[in-house]
Image (tube, rainbow, N blue to C red; front, side, top):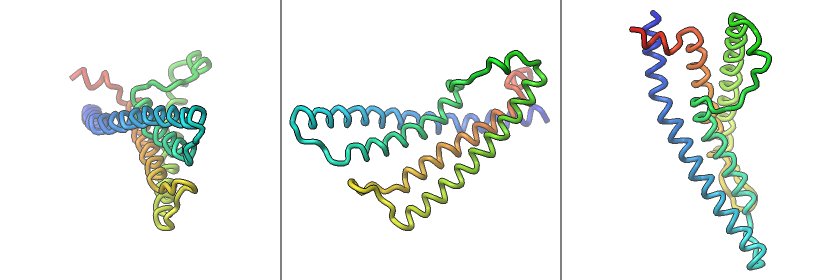
Length: 173
């Protein structure tokens, strides 16, 4: 049974990992684009004295994409910040119980947020919601948030099962 869960979790990780990495790399390209847009906007505003309309609107949309495309990869690779000054001083059993509670709460929270963002995206698409100046459709942003948070939910599910079935157990056989 233990071996089955480890194999199953490993398969899910192998599927999720390249998806998260691809999303992260897409976010990186968007970040580079965001830097170029910002630099060009500053140049146009202060050197040419001709500001670009809608720059802030475009940058806001890009920021949403960067955050929610990059968040799953950083979480999967355990590169997020955590404060464990108190938890590290507790005994291992209490640490495990707190970890279980935290992961369950994370799974529930991320699942609810992902579902609400998908519903919001569907509504935004139905009413053709757009930004004010550039008329950028809003629904891709909502879908991106739903994707990023949905991936977070899957990552937390994997981490939850890793509490009970650590990777070392998969290597033993």
